[in-house]
Structures are given as structure tokens and as C-alpha cells.
Length: 196
Image: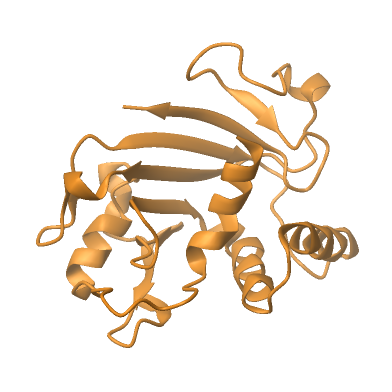
């Protein structure tokens, strides 16, 4: 689980090797898909990243609220969108930067950890939300951006939280229960889900 989640938080933002048959969807469809994880009242004002007609990762829509959404990566299997608090944007953007430089997951974690500790990279100390909605390509309507039978995962970043400070276990004991991943580090976060 740890590897899957850690990869999710960084790798979907990297286009990677382009495939000849990849279709970049219209911006409005990408935006609809990108905001699927959010509660209805937050969708309209969220900033959205997606892909331009050249397949480059770009801002598709500027935001007016406190949420940032990442649309589905057309270069990866399945459908997945994520949205997070704007307070996490420096952390996420730095991860994308380091990934583009070819840094490994361990290197990214180490570099961002040092930068957060020195104050060079801002990281919120209060809990910050990340929503994820994901599913299968066969359940996705590329004309409307709708995804049926998708699942939700909720991630609450709580930097430096521990199992002692939260009372949460460091692994789930039942399906869907909250648990604390990477306790005691700048990456500490509460995992909840996935849920249908």
C-alpha cells in the first residue's frame, strides 16, 4: 500500500514516455473529470491542471477557491483524479519538479524533507485535505467526463503527526478505517478508504 500511495502522490503528474495512440481530451471534459473527487460546492472554483493538445501538463483553469485538482493522466492506465488544499501546492509542485529531474522517490522525500525543515519549502502544519476518485477506463465516458463505479480515497496531511499524537494505528485493521501513514515525518497523512 505504501508504494502505491507514494507513487500516486507524485507520479501521476509526470507525463512520461508518450504513446502514439494517446488521445488528449477537450479541456472542458478534462476539467469535469478533474473535479470529480470534490464535494459539489467546491468544484466550480477549483484550479485545474491537465494536458494541452501537445500533451504537456499545464494549468487548464485558474482557481477562485482553496482547492487544486489534477486531471486524469492520459499516459497511464485507468482513470484517476485528485484534488487537494491549495496549501499543499508548494509541496506537490516541488514533487513534480523533482520527478521531472529524474529524482527517485527516496530522493524526492529526502530533498523535500530537508527543504521543509529549513523553511525553504512551505508545508502546512494544520491538517490539509486531498481527495481522490479513481476507476476503470471501461467505466469512463470520454465525451462527458463522467466515471461510474469509481472509488473515493481520502488523505489528510498532518505533517509530523504520530500514532501517539493522533491515536491512529499505522496500518488499517478493518476495510475503510482511518490509519496514519509515514508517522513522524513531513509526509505523515491519515488514509481513509477507498470507498464506493
